[in-house]
Amino acid sequence: MHEKPITVTYKPAPGLASQQEYQFQQKGHNSDAGPIIEVEVLTPAFYSRMVHYTSNRILLLEEALPVESRNRTLFVSDLDSLTALLDSAIEITEAPRVFCHMPLIDRLRWKGLRLLRCKSPSQSFPNHTSDGAEHNEKQQSADFTLLDQHAAQDCFNGEPYRRNVTQLFLAQRYAGGFPGLISLFDLSARAMLTMFGLSMALSLVDPPKTTDISDLESTMKFMLFNAVHGWAFLKGVSAPTGTGGRYP
Image 1 (cartoon, rainbow, N blue to C red):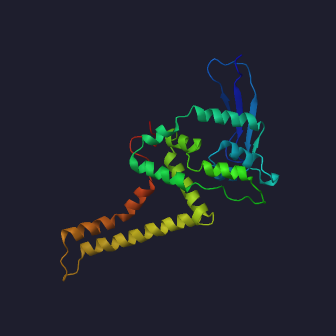
Image 2 (cartoon, helix red, strand yellow):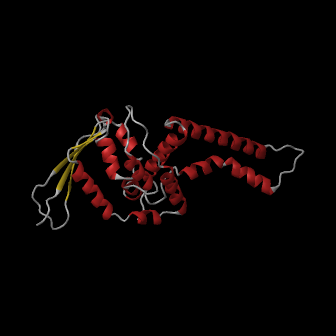
Image 3 (cartoon, one colour):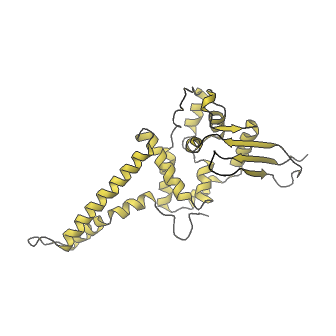
């Protein structure tokens, strides 16, 4: 007996976008109408919290069915069916391949995101998480999520996703959960590198008359003049040329 397709109705957080509907069906399955799963994001905070989870089951339990109901950020009409659907997606996903095809510098950037991933920030109301959930989350902390894989492979905005999520994890770990402090540090670093590079350029244009500048010293100063571009390169400001942010 063929299984019926599953229809998922997704409603984003208020004011962000219109409701969307998706249908999932494997080849050879019954084309008759099947179960409908309603998914509604109750608050925009869900989007910044979901990137912390590597387990779909824990994500749904913590955000859709928290111990403290006032902390709920997601509504799911059929939690078990949605969990099974997401788990089946994991089985057919060839996760490591997308990252193996990347240039070395991009693999290092994505590895940095993976290593920085941490537990989601505390909710407004006390919400005691079970020890089992925390243990499972720690066990899978080294994995890429389906969202990571989708952003790296299927999205033209993969690089903005990686930078923003990395900034979010850095803020959670080192800046008390305030991404603005990470942005301020980045701005300060760029300003300092620019000023330092400008001073190097001026010393090349108008060197002291009593000092002989060697070719090596001139080259080093020219490289320091462009240090701000090196900083941008390490962060990965732009997607790889000719790929549109995609990898095979």
